[in-house]
Length: 140
Image (cartoon, rainbow, N blue to C red; front, side, top):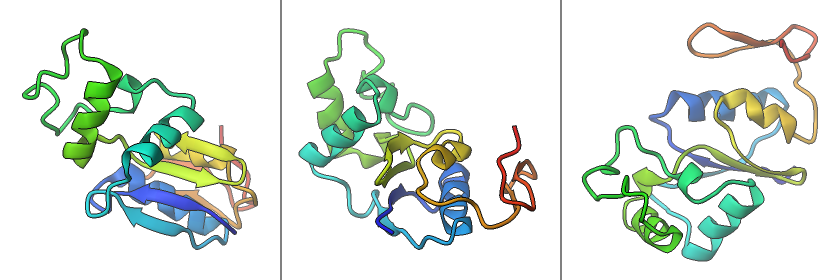
């Protein structure tokens, strides 16, 4: 199963997303993007395929977003991409790529929309929120 997650192990949402992928019986390719950031073409492709604007793909909290002046509405997409490449912490996470598409999985259960196989059992997020029941069905 060809699934890739752009992962930050320090991020709870990213950890929950990875666990949901594994709960489907898939061992994905894990790219720790802070250590191995995508190149420009890959980053632009991920954002485009996820149906996001560049600004929607930028992480603001816990990053140098404001310090770099990226909160200025006049900042262009190219400038945002440049900043994301120079400071990968600005890349929102986790992006997941599957044969069914690409999503920025915030919240983590968004990954369920693109996994090629169903969940194999119950899943509860780290914060205690039940997401999948014992039959592998998404809890709405």
